[in-house]
Image (tube, rainbow, N blue to C red):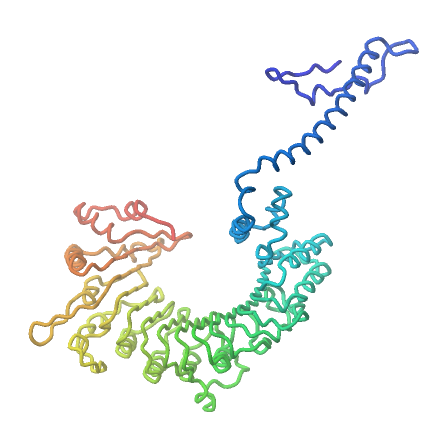
Length: 544
């Protein structure tokens, strides 16, 4: 049947209206088409003529629109070219400038002629699989002119087209003299393709190399750069031939204990160093070699984080601290992944370095009560102390009860500092298992009484306590509520000092439930100890 045009209000559905009944042969028995088919054919010819006219009119309107925009420019088109370029630069910090060029001809001219829009070159390696993608990359690099260039290859999961990717990397190499930042997350077989064929990268300040496949042999051919900041993940230190004597900051994952020592030896300008997943390499040179110790003094290092792999034993950790001497150190973080902390070597290191340590963080490790006490006796300049113990860590009763007792290691003549431990402490954080002695916490807040009427109180600004427990073992791990008397004393201390409390309890789930323990304890007190434990935890939960 002849298709009837569907009307929506006064508008015709053109898709239905374009139905042509002559697509099926005329059913007339005569040699000539019937009159109905002839009428439809005539109408089809008129429609085609109108379509041709409409196409021409649309094209003319498009050209007229370009002239209209030129005569009636928008606000952004009326702005000076320099202002438009600045706006585009801010946009290009978060999105591709190619998007700007796709808006209109004028925007494309501005974007294509502004080199600063093209100085960040981000490549998703698994998308470089055609000649067009390679050409787009080459054009991008060309538009950046002579400005310093930041190259970033983020980690990708898809397969790599090594032919096209190799062509693009070679184009990047041609601009090596302009490299300012080189951040590569690639398999070793692809990392080795980068080389300084376009000249020495004298402007390069940041180098980040991460091998995404640890089983492949590593060869790095970036040899002429002198970065100030380096990030190295799962690459052997001896496979990295760039200059080390200009480094001021380094973050490295997967190095051995001996390699960490070599980093400190070979980078004399280092100020901040972070080493994660530090392993013990039994084939490396002996860490107890006396010849190494004299070379381990680093006069400039201020911040050190070292996270030992769980397979590193206490002897190896202790040997590392026996190696080093860091007189400028102000911040130290040690993570041992549930291994006992080697307190004697660590304490000896702190004494030997004679550093004014302001921040100390002991994370994911087991530290004895007396051990922690020994460490804080040697660090009177501490302003921040973080203890994140393993789940089985006992409450540090001796540590708290000795906080306000006379300390023979303190030598200052200041009467407010001469006997109290941690006299400059501003922030204290403790993370551990389900048990905590809240009454001991008051020792941190108690003033110290000296001769005459002089009182000294630590300049505490924040106290954080986080208690973890298992949901499957709640009878054995009850919520560590704060008792009423201690609550009252904590409240009074807060009013007197202005210290901020952050007390929380968590149930080990996925994701964990974290609840405000201070509020729960007040609620329990107000409900006369009939407060429902589980209800309270869920009522005040927040996901961490």
